[in-house]
Image (cartoon, rainbow, N blue to C red; front, side):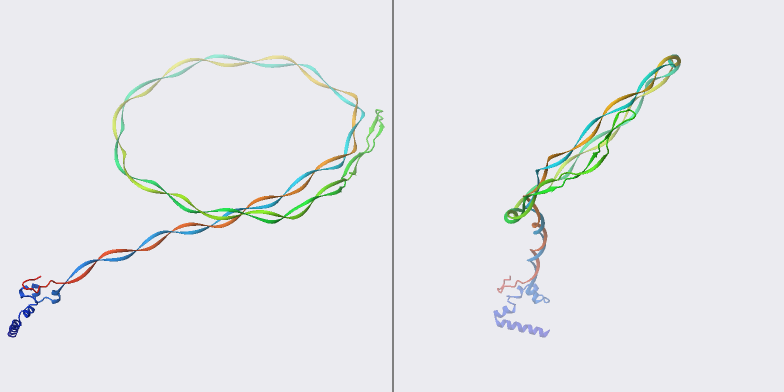
Length: 451
C-alpha cells in the first residue's frame, strides 16, 4: 500500500513539471478524467472492445441459377413415296382383214322323179245304227212342311242406381325457385397458318430412236385341191312282172347299192404373207419429274373457355290432400219370363215312277275294193358346176402408241415437331448478412468538448 501511494505521488510531480502538453497526454488526450465515458473507466473493460464496435448488416448479392425449359423444335423427316410415272411406247397391232375369193365347185344335184303304179286295195266301211230300248226309273220328290213349337225365354231387365262415395285426391302444387349456376362455354377462335408443301410435276422430254418394224408383202400361190370322195346310192333297173292273182303288171324295183365317187379337183389361188424387218425412226416421249415447293394455308381452331353466371329456375312440387264426393252408378238385373211360338220346318219324301225311251248305237262293217294309182319316187343325179365366194383372211400390221406406267420411288420431306429441354441461366438477387466492425466515437482534444 505504501509503495503504491508513493508511486502515484511521484507520477503527479512528473506531470506537473512537464507542463500542459504532458498533462494532456496523461489524461489520454482529454482535459481531465471527468470527460472520459463511464465504459472507458471500468476496470474490467477490454481495450479492443472499447476501441471498436461490431454490428450485423445486409448486402445484396447476385446469384446465377439454372432453370429447365422446354422448347419445341422441328426436324426434317424424309418419307418414301411410290408414284406412277406415265411413258409412251409404240407397239405393233395385227388386224385380220378378209377379202372375197371366187372358186368353182362341182356339185351333185339330186332330182326326185315319180312314176305311176296301179294298185288294188280293200278298205273297210263302218256304219253306225241305233235301236230303241224302253226303261223305267223312280224319282224322289221332296216336300218341306212346317209345325208350330212353343218355348219359354227369360228376358233380363237392367236398372241403373246411384250411391255416394267419398274419395281422397292428392293435388300437386308446384313452386318455382332460382339458383345461380356457373357455366363454362367454349368459343372457337380460328387462326390461319402456312406450311411448305412439296409437289412433283412431270416435264415431257422427246427423244428419237431407231426401232425394228416387222412388215412384209403378199404373194399369190396356186394350189390344186383334190375332190372329196362321196358315197352315192345307185339303184339297179327294175323289172315288170305279171301278178297271177290280179293279172296286172307289177313293177319290181332293182337293188340299191352304195358307190364311192370322187369329186373333180379344184384349183385354188391364195395369197401368202412374206414377212420382212425394216428399221424406222420413232419419236418417244418420256417424263422427267421435278420437285417444287409452295405454301399451303391451313386453319387451326382453338377453344377459348368463357365463364358466365346464369340463374337457373327449378321447380319444387308438394302434394295437398283433398276430400271429394262422387256419385257411383251401379246396375241391377231382374229376369222376366216370356212365352213365344216358332215354326220348325221338316221334309217329306215320296217316289214317282217314270218311263222313258233311249237309243243304243251299234256299228256294222263291210269291205269295199278300190283301184287307185300311186306315184313311186326315184332319184336322178346330175353334176352342176357352181361358182362360190369365200372370205380369205390376211393380216395387216399397224403401229399404235400406248401409254404405260412405271412405279418410281422418291423421298418427300416433311417437318416433325419434337421437344428439347435446356438449362437457362437466370440472375437472382438475395440479401446476405455481413458482420462489420466500426471505430467508436472518441473525445475531442479540445478541452471541455466531447464528441
